[in-house]
Amino acid sequence: MFHFTPARANALLNYSWAANVIALLAAGIFSDRLLVRKPFMLAGGIGAAVLIWLFLAHDYGAPSFPAMVGAASAISIMLGIGYAAWMASFTEMVEAYNPALTATGLAIWGWLLRLVVTGAFLAIPVVVSPVTDPARWRLWYVFCAGGALVFAAVVFVMKGRWSTTRAQADAVAHNAAVDRALALEA
Image 1: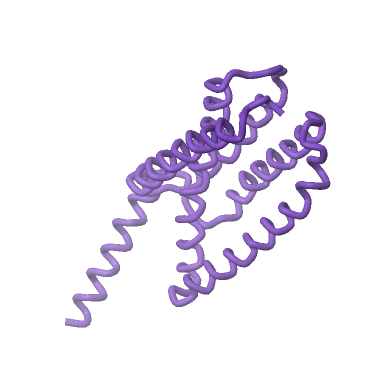
Image 2 (image 1 turned 120 degrees about the horizontal axis):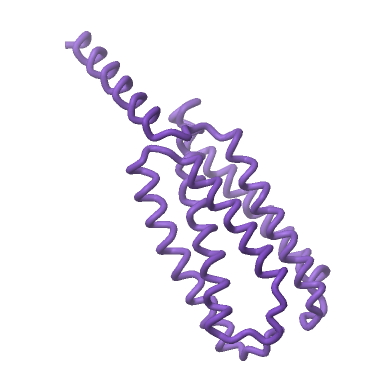
C-alpha cells in the first residue's frame, strides 16, 4: 500500500517491535515502582487509540520510511505501556481471588487470545482485500482502534489502584499484618 518492498516492510516491523519491547520493560519497571497499574493501562489504551486515529486521519500519500517507523513505533510504545501493566494487573487480580488459580487464569487468557487471533486471521482477508484498497485498510485500523478503546474501558473493572499514595499505604498495612501473623506463630 505504501510502496515498500517486503524487506523494507519487515524492517519497519523490526523498529516497531523494538520500540514495543523497550516500552514493555520501562512500563513494567515504572508500574512496579509506583505500585499502580490502572494509569498505565488507561494511558496505553487511549494513547494507542488516539495515535491510530491520527494515523488514519492524516493523508500520508506515500509516506517516507522514517515517517512510517515513527508512526508504527509510537503506536507500539503506547500498546506496550498498556499491555505490561494489564498483564501485571490481570495476574494480581486472579491471585487476589485464589493464588492457586494464577496459572489457570493465564491459561484461560491464552486460550481466549488465540480465539481472537484466529478470528482476526479469518477476518483480515475479508476486511482488507484487496491489499491496495486504502479504504479497506482504514476499516481494519478502525477495528484496531476500537479494540484499544475496549482495552482502555476494561481498566475500570480490573482490580488495582489509581494512586501511588494509596498503594504505599496498603503495602505498609499488609506488611504490618504479615509481621503480626508471624509474631503470633512464634
